[in-house]
Image (cartoon, rainbow, N blue to C red; front, side, top):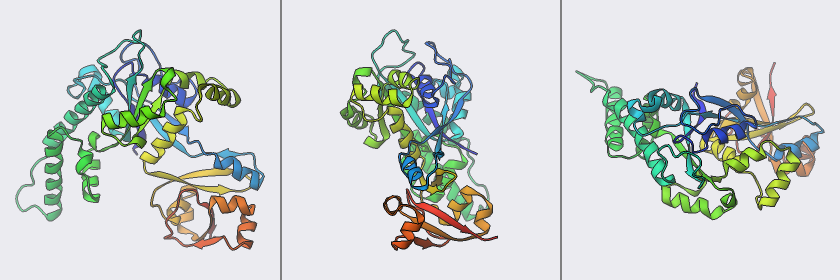
Length: 359
């Protein structure tokens, strides 16, 4: 099973510091020398969701269970990683096991931190992408032309392989020519690194952490969308991770920030992975459950328990806003705002759900 999102970058750009802050503890080794992280560290991080506390008030529970997203801290890549430099083959294999890539790029000015090949965010991203492209090109060039009377499925696959090889060989990302399900299946089968979705974290000086315009500027420079770029000071996030919630809010207020960079990163990662949350609320707990965007009601029920898929009868659904306004299930039913949906209903972000399951 593939993991969530890989944190990658050149050595000493702040990857492990960021990962430690994500987990709010020193799980990864953050050290001022290359290859401090040899084995990938994996962490399941809660997705910030203010809705759970509000739901808990309605149903009178104190237990909140957020959705989670998985991050993998991969050791620093260097130029030549695709040919084995810096244990590159091992590290690239760790990226293959994930669904998306989060590039951590050095935007801070502290020259006491050794620059292990780092120049600037744009050049660093180009270096990492080149290594991923070279690794993918090696994979694609090993594919064999179908021989003899190949069936239509084999011929179609070969056409896709040729398209991907031409694209990557021209210095482009495989993702740029993936347009349908068949393309996606071949890219997934080959574990192509450049087919994965991307985020970019610019690790900046503390004084720039609240500069929202920087994200737009760097998105243009990097050829990414603004929602793919997150401005973070890993140093600030590390300090925040050692504080309790009250002190965190006070610290953020002093810095002129409404939310931490990590909260923004976690939410962006969740969306990048094509995930959304549906909510359940009862006396035992208020909980956010994870499903892919486009999942049906019966698939969502299966996230709670696999038996629910076989025994699914219907789903009681209310919008989050209606659930709060009406004071819970009784209120939404009496006000006519309760919807009854079947197996094929497509789940929406923030649906509050109660599944009706047969015996």
